Length: 272
Image (cartoon, rainbow, N blue to C red):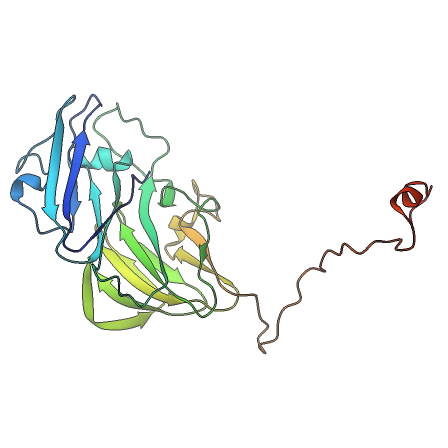
């Protein structure tokens, strides 16, 4: 988890087929997509549930660029906790953008003691995840110094998360798949369940944390450090005065006995 990332372009006719090979009913809710009919919304009492052994194709035209997500809307509290969700991104048709690369971070919580067959489902999260992993297993975000990248933050879980970036500010440019008319700078952003934010970050020297500033969410089963914590890696580390921090001595391949042949070196009984 999360499920496969789905990417489309504005104007695409999108068809997503759900084949239910499980023993429970499921559906797909296209969270944030408004250009669809009620029957395609994936809410069982308003559209339908896909029963075991059945298939259903969700169809829509991607009309607006933005960061969205999809998830099961049957027994939602249980099926979201079982990882039935993923990212859905609609990109501009013309490809014009100010960032060089984008990164997706889908935030969630996990109760490692839960049993999906024990109902009612009452989860008490003890792990806090980004893209299905917690620190130290969350990969670094590599944003080279001077490059501008986009970070797509999505909260698919049931808790509020306060994401804080060390070392620099980010520019908040979109919320819930909609461009903001007045982007603003910040270093901490609060995401409620279901919210999505797009952040522009310019790479700098050094490596700095991006983490949830709610202390409990920086733990693994109560042990710090853990949880929603990862590193944003930029250029080589610099001192406060702007000079480079010396790295380890380079490995040299210069022969230690330049005047001897390989056979003569092998014959030496002692090495200096």
